[in-house]
Amino acid sequence: MKLNVIDRELLEKIAELHSVPQGAYNIRKDGKALDRHTTSNIDIIPKKDRPGIDIFVKPNTRGESVHIPVILSKTGMEDMVYNTFHIGEGADVYIVAGCGIHNPGSKKSQHDGIHDFYVGKGARIKYVERHYGQGKGTGDRVLNPTTYVEVEEGGVAELEMVQIRGVDYTKRNTKVKLHKDAKLIVTERLLTDQRQEAHSIIDVELVGEDSSAQIISRSVAKDESKQIFNLNLIGLNKCRGHIQCDSIIMDNAHVSSIPEITARHSDAQLVHEAAIGKIASEQIIKLETLGFTENEAEEIILEGFLR
Image (cartoon, rainbow, N blue to C red; front, side, top):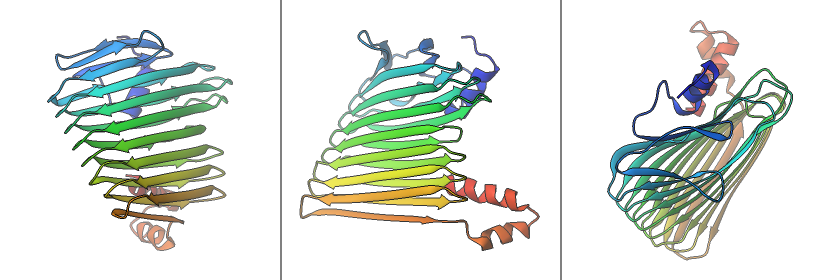
């Protein structure tokens, strides 16, 4: 696998990869598969009818990982993939995805990733998705992920969705369906600056008895950037759900947080809360007394908030 300096930098940012990963992986660059590896328990098969892959994890597979990062390094590049994950019963796997865009020119570079997850009975996944943009060109860096997750009885899906920086526009669409005793944990962290725009939509249907969901979204909006959050829990059975949406707003940014809960069963217990505010001045002052500049103090606070 041939990687240049930019490729390696992008892979480090979005997948924390410093070398070829252990376990199963599929690395995609500029619309083509760069390298692929499978294991005895995890198979990766290219789709025949459209760009993308099918990932099959055998039942009761434990302690293995799947890395499927995407990198774009050309201006004017538009890439779309359809990836489907089939997680066997009783499996427990760690999945790392995400996309990094290096745009050196004046044309828009865009990646749209459609990911479908089918989590079997009693299975568990931790899915980490990181997005990052860089490059000195004037062309936009656009990332539009669509994620559908269905969790069967007793299964667990933990989603960690992070936008690091450098993405000019993103529309993140996540839909989840939870069956009996299934559990969802979502952690979203998002940063925008300059004139960037981000729209995050998360819809969760708690279909099965005693299903549960927790969504925690944290964001920082700087400069002239705009953020919109639409987070929705729908309780269709005896269930529990909680939404927490916290944002720090700075400069002339615009943040709109719209948490929503809908109960269609008398034993649905759903809670939502949202807060938008600025950095407390006493936090800045405290760090300045320790020798940090105002800018350094601000960065430390924001880093801690988004951790």
